[in-house]
Image (cartoon, rainbow, N blue to C red; front, top):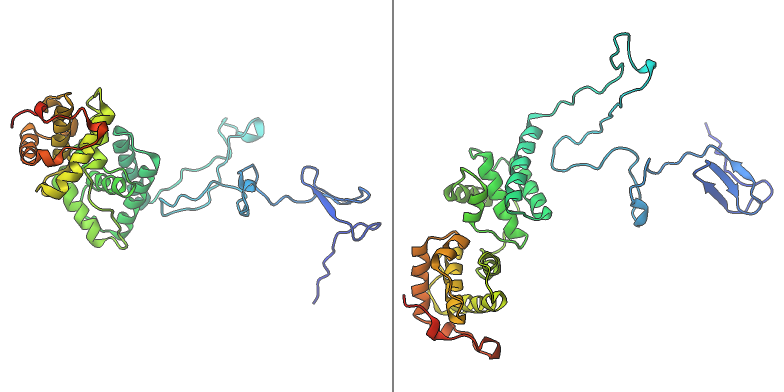
Length: 318
C-alpha cells in the first residue's frame, strides 16, 4: 500500500521558492505572492529561548531545562487557576487544579544537601560556579554512596573544600570549619579521605599553596602598602619553600608569619594578634614559624629597586 505525499508548489511558478510566514501561518510564492498553503504549524519553541542565536538546533517545545542535580527529570504539566463560572464548581472551588507533586526520598536528601551547601557558600561569598561544582560533587557522592555514615553538614563542607581547590580558589580547612557549625577538622579530613579513596575518576589539584592565600589575608589587615607587602610576602614564601623546613606547617600559619615579617621589613609593623585573627591561627604558632624564618632572613629578603624600602633593621626580635 502506497501513500501519496502532496508537495506544495505554485501552480503558476512551480520552480519558485516558497516563503513561510509563521505569524499568519501561510506559505507564499516568492514570484507572484500567491498563498499556496495556509494553517502552517510552527514546530519551534512556544516562546523565545535564544536558541536561534546559535547554530544549534532548537529541540525544545515546552517545559524548562533538565536539572541534572536530581534523579527524577520528568515532564510535568501545571494547570493554572481558571477564571469565571466554568472554572469553579457549585461550592466555589476550582474544578481543575494541579495535585501536589510527590518527591522521592533520594531527591529530598539531595535538595537538603544543596540547601546546606548554598547556606555555607553564602557565608564566605563563593562564586556561583564553585557552588554548582560543589552540588555536582555532592550528587556524585550520593550516587556512589561513598560517604555513608557522615553527617550532611560534613559532606557538604568537604564538597565545598574540594570544589574550591578544583576551581582555583582554595580555602583552608579552618575557613571551611568556620562556615560549617558543628563540623570539625577531623570530620572534614576523614570525609575527604573517604571521598578521595572511593569516588571514581577523582581528580584533585595540588595542596593549598601559600601564595594563593597571601593576597586574601592581607586584604583583611587594611594595610597602607598593600601591594608592596603582598609582593614581599610572596617572595619570602617562595624562598622559604626552598631553604626553610616549613613543609610540615599549616598554610595559614606560614602565611601569618610571612606577612608579619614582610610588614616589619617595610616598616608597617602589625601586632601578631591582628595576624592571628586574620588567618585564624594561634599567636604562639605564628611566633614559632617566624623564629624558623628569622634564622635565614638574610636569604629571604627580596632585592631590586622596587624593594628599596625593605630593611632588616625593622625586624623585631624573636
